[in-house]
Length: 315
Image (cartoon, rainbow, N blue to C red; front, side):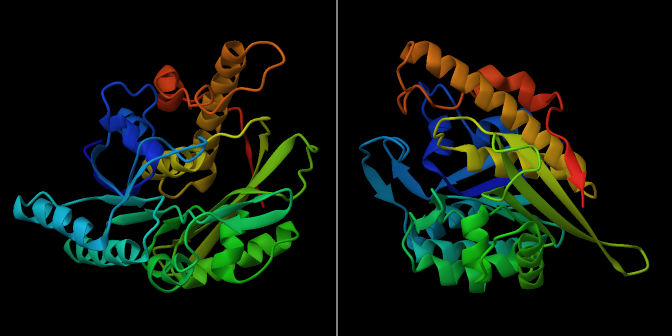
């Protein structure tokens, strides 16, 4: 695979790849393992991810992003097959991303923009944003309409659509709303909906619209049940979005297979991480954020060739 991908708005965990002492690179590392060349641009420059008690650093501005992109243009290397965005804290930066995506799509109409609309999450049924609230209208009005694939969690899907999700049927309706905004592929990466397999499982849902040679639209919908892990990880959204990008590249018209490989790889990474973290913490001790850093390097083979342990159900 000779695809090139630019990562704009990389999260703090993704940026760790730039440090020679980093133990667990995320998006750049595993996307490279799957055959992508990457130009990574940081949206924030943090000492560590925000799952720790303290962090220091800076938030990149739109002018700084523009300057970096101009450097790519001056060298005529701004030719990409994919753009992936994640954690962003500045609305002007996010708006600049949209301008760049539009320009890149003019150069390459087949470019695929994958957006992980990182805004917040739910804890014990209550949702809250962990980025400035003024990012929401930018995502709604500018970002999602130019995205081809979006990977919100349930809370983010509710924010984007303006509708609550209490059932699988409502989740499917919300995905239709998001399709109507622009993206052909929508995956709700996690939800609080009850799983038919019991309370030990989380549900993810996916919907993909494809066009037949005759011009009609076919929609594939899937549900995935994932075993819960009793720990708080940082970087799982980054991992999901990048893996989904890679596997939809390999299986562009088969969301079921792409999601099965994505979630199976994630299962192996998280299980390895929690085993290592518990061993480091010791019996009866809860692992620290440092001990829960995703074991990406150790999971290279699972990323390249994941054993399928998560089966998707076609709805």
